Length: 116
Image (cartoon, rainbow, N blue to C red):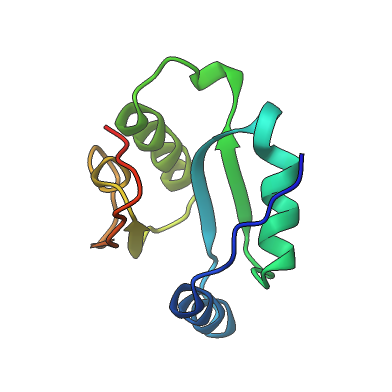
């Protein structure tokens, strides 16, 4: 499988600004680690998303959980590890609901699909 999802220029610019400003950017996705992990990593790198702290993909342990439950659990673990969540950016409302959402949330438009 190959990935060919182009970066949104404004998002890549924001990402680079945050990384270059010293923020530890963590990418949290509902994509399955087993099926889409490697292709996601390759696509991120090919599109210029370099220097992030960590990419977290959904493992089998979280299969069957709603997106809100899964992402809340991961954010809780990050806070317990000592991270402070300053901002949370997502294209789905389920990215921004639940626990440990951070100081600010930013909803991006996505007319292509909806994740409950």
